[in-house]
Length: 598
Image (cartoon, rainbow, N blue to C red; front, side, top):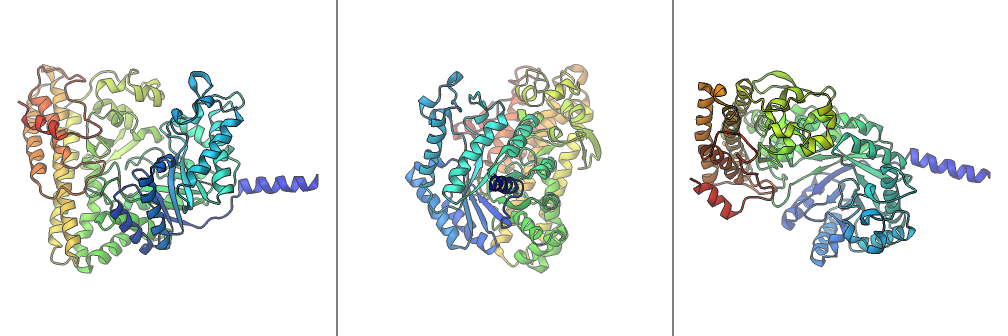
């Protein structure tokens, strides 16, 4: 009896106090550009990186490695990383996969859901994982997303597990038995939430996980990687050891194609998490698909920031700028490049964001992106939901009562709006949103002020980069930096023009009483500026890398707004006034159609 008590005490002690792990200094490669991935791995070893993740275009699900070519490419990178001295090399996975992946005999629950009370299902699942792990025999661990998945475990049938958290925990513990206990690999579960209720379920699940060696990876913010989001305070309450996932390549902030240089933001967030005793490292995304790796570009300063603060949390952001620029560009270039680099954050946040709302879709111009006014509103995660906007505006705003109320199209503020009603119903219940169109001259002028602020900063930054030319020691890096800031200025001008046009037209469409001389001027001027800015991008010779964000395509997106106003059939603003911006990209045929519309 006494020995059983001791064993139980040892078990629960292990659960509460997991085994100490080596501090993680990690990078994550998303792109399947093999040459680029190999170069990143070689650079990672030089940057003292001890943890590598392969994800997205390389491997999003272990089952994808049943493709021999993909498995060979991934295994080649795994072996290269080990040869370069990277100790922990991991691949991504999601669980569950789509329901049709699982044998029909297990889909006997209501609506053909999985019967989680069937022990044969769990036996099959473990056997399947044993087979899948054999496809990547030299990896050191799995990064498992168990929230944003094909089939949601929490939606499957069970009479014995009443809550979502119980189902999630059962899945993690089952897979931990195979991944950790049988194969001696690390298992890191990756959290992701859209709503407050999902956050509660995730936290409850973490408290139910029994395996002592499961590690948690949390994003640097509660939802997705937006500059306006606060840090994820809930990380302090997670009892497992955690690592923080940073997006150094900035999926939503230019993807390294424009000047996504954010040492100040990364430093502030990373120092916040380092004060938490169970945070045991970080991992940084280094690209957003294709050839968008930030390594070897000015945006590499983002990963350098994380590295330096991990080494010395007291290091200042100013010192980080100095060290990075002197090391890569030479000491004489510092007085010119440092102010340009320091302005980059404000340029991006006043161009790709509109008064604190991300009016883009994965960095792509899209002022009618529904998530901008609903899912991605940072006010979901702020208490109170208030933001101070600088950018020449210099005012404090309530996210919902002020910003969303005036900037959102009317249909995104109603109960019929899918994202808002399902994910943030409490916003509607508070009465913060007023039905109907509220865009007016006062708010238009705030938007124009912010966008022109970004243009002026971008002009100054580009001039500073040009002044550094005689002092930069690396010619290739100088050209990369010059083209980066040239694209950034062209982007700022495009967003300023299209925002002026789009929001002024919405006022104009409210009726004759709203068609002041100023509104008419802004709309006509916006038409010309939008066309001119798009033309500048189309003839610019250094288009840069292409990821999920195709920089040149933004010219066509802007022209879609231009054409919607110029060739309108009536003066009513409706859902069909502007074409829906295509998520997957604009085809060559469609681009010609946009250019030739009359």
